[in-house]
Length: 115
Length: 108
Image 1 (cartoon, each protein chain N blue to C red):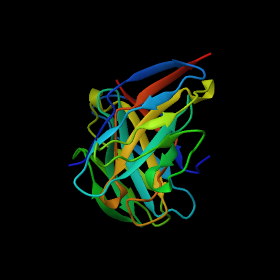
Image 2 (tube, each protein chain N blue to C red; image 1 turned 180 degrees about the vertical axis):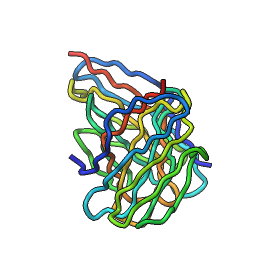
Image 3 (cartoon, chains in turn brown, green; image 1 turned 45 degrees about the vertical axis):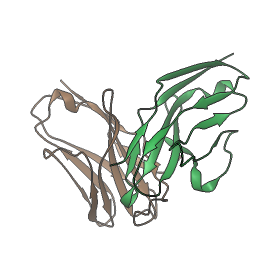
């Protein structure tokens, strides 16, 4: 068990709604990463936070936002949801500042279904 | 831009057969490459990384900069190797770029 936890495991909502996904990193890890996994796009990096500050952005839509709190947990907010946002959202954490050799440990994911 | 290509979606072999999962990458800098594995109903986990140069569960992967490849190999597949395998490249800030993944099915 990598120690990264994500809640909820499953989320079903309707188009136009807003949801919040939560991630708690491994103890001691300062970096948190969010990824989206969909059938057509595969696993895509969304955004990274390090010790509360945004460090890198990937293919994250403007309707999506994230933050990392002082206790290092992170939340991914998805708003104005569309059918195409249905996917598995993973959180990962690593210990360091973002060196390319950092090992990322993944959570179990949150499966979002937009109806 | 960094890109990872896994050309095959599925590889099905019999137990004891050799396995090679292909991965090619495109990256302007010095790449850090990883293989991640996802067993059924489990989370994504690191299998191995090229800088470690180690063998995990009998798997090895060699970085070939000339061919820009990082193929995953195992001489004798086991049924418990059946899983989804992702090749990934780490760029600035450890942002991982993943390939589309390949399903390895090892039949008894």
